[in-house]
Image: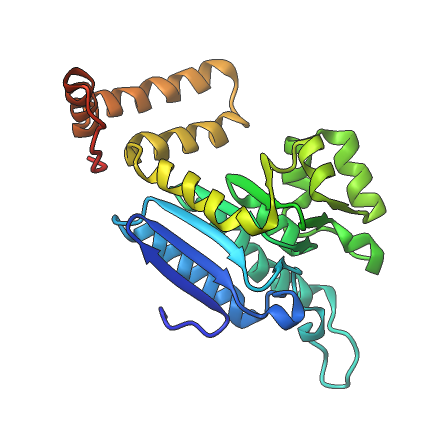
Amino acid sequence: MNEYTELTFLRRDHVATVALIRPELHNPMSAAMQAELIDALGRADADRQVRVVVLTGADGSFCAGGDLRTMPADEGGEPAGPYVKRGVLRELQRVIRAVRECEKPVIAAVNGVAVGGGCDLALACDIRIASDCARFGEVFSRVGLFPGTGGTYFLPRLVGVAKALELIWTGDVIDADEALRIGLISRMVPHDELGARVAELAERLAQGPPLALSLAKAAVYRGLDLDFTAALDYASTAEAITLSSADHTEGIRAFRDKRPPVFEGR
């Protein structure tokens, strides 16, 4: 694909920024945007020059989730049945999977509204940095829906079971202060500084050893479902790989030479 109408893709040095661009509607995920997001995330993941991905939205909104106005209907105008709508949700879930399956660090720069599937899109990212204007909400219950894009998986792991259920059941929208307090985001910054602060972190990560960061990401997520012994077994294999890498050799040389290392992901 690589030609986009509902998002922009910009690579600067080792950082790829993907920005959703339907701001008049708070960037809801149409079928076209879903396909473009999957393509853009796959493109970033496959590009060896890309080491960090930043996901954001245009003009003061992150993402309002799925576009309810595009839900399929039967020929007679009646709402489509569960089988058809499950297929629609499975397509939307492919976007969430694409975020989580990216082997590189993915940072959500949340600059405004992130609700419904848009909230889950942010939760799927590895790190969430929000402006003080950001708002988050699992608002599905407000319209009689179940959070089918990962909220029931991500939220308990971030904020605990009780708080996750409260947010899911009530459909409350919380501000960035509350999101920071409960651990839903890792940083809150002034709105006008969001771009610069995210770029600073992205560049810092991009200067790190790509192989080691990728393996650490995989180990953290796999470790959520492994027992302690299995997690250590995985960690020993990953560490053996990094011990044999050119980046490790470069790191040692740089340490001895008292200079910043130049990692190449080998």
